[in-house]
Length: 386
Image 1 (cartoon, rainbow, N blue to C red):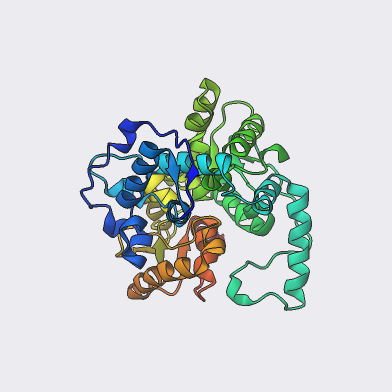
Image 2: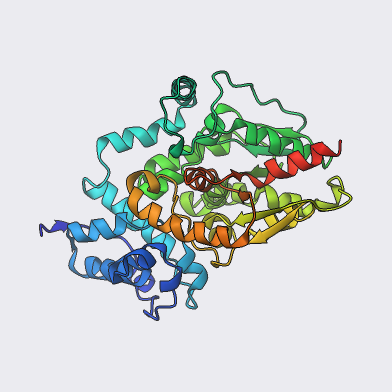
């Protein structure tokens, strides 16, 4: 195999923090699918150590780094507190800046996520294709309206982050979330178009400079001190990590304002309308970036549980395989990982699945399941009693 020079840039102390105990293995979706040591967290860290010691990598190294979903389930399982996610992000950025890891067309694709007008145009094209029934249903896309109604602020108590793809394809989810927040008596305001994208997918791809540029833009779009609520688990995790990404006082202060919307609602649970009795049941899929990164997945059960029986899955938060753009670039592995999630969902016997992350929602929906955002469910149940 051809060798390529690489300055990995990970401190030796971080690489040495993994003691290779193997407790992460059952929680790694790519290891469970392939049973390959190098497809596990400790295996990937061993490859990183070798790269750091020699200063060279090969094609196999790139393949195993690229095949990581970055679910960070290994961090929850690790007794030594190894920060695998940070090491993987550093590795991907080293690959993106020093090799041809990210091809030009991928870079252009990621960059367009920060262009709301371009996304709006592209979404209208997809809407037309849906109307003429060209797009296959297995893609799991929501019904994209040809004309989007503008989101209107109702007050300045909290901000609601809207993001890129979710705003372009799932704006009705934002509207449902707004109604639930307003049901507590609080007003919702929306940021300017400068907050077009949080940069999460860019970090996953190793495009650190672009992610930092988007972070600066996003921060400027949220003046004042009002809480910033996020209804996408992946976006919320990224916004909360701005202090680490930018390493500035302003970024750390910004990150402290960010809350997953379910976190905020759990703190305002008694301000939500009451329902005489619970009706129905729903299976809850914990998005990785809500459970393993933000560690706030229990708030989803608390909010949903006020109105409906929220049934947890029995897989200890194993990844569903979506991984942001992962399912597009690794469809076979993503489908194999999803099969395990589908089996867990089936065992609940619940007719509907709730997922607080758009990527997970669309990935599971493409398998034929009825999947909804938790607050869409809450919104519909509240509306029935109004």
